Image 1: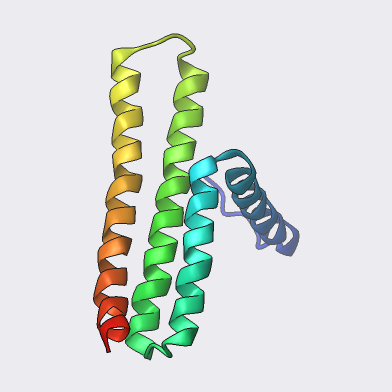
Image 2: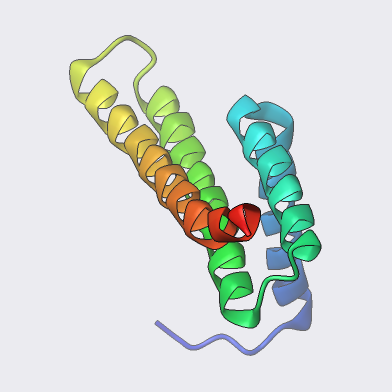
Length: 123
């Protein structure tokens, strides 16, 4: 396969496609809007409690982890629905696994939030 030359236009287009994916997620997936709302309040809490740099890293990583999981879950669901229109037990397992990924990421983010914020709330 020949190597293609660098193209600034193609690079910019890839950002546009990624941004379109984020817009699709927020517009069409109810859970992503819930995660976005929670993320907004977590960021506000972070500023209010003046969390340190390591805590910011944990908070930002957690938010990114949950949104990445939502993006993968939505991608898997859309692809599965395209490939198989009728009910299928094997497709259901794939979709359940993708949903479990979101659940695990959200649970992890929640635990990180507890570790970061509960001591500050108690103090």
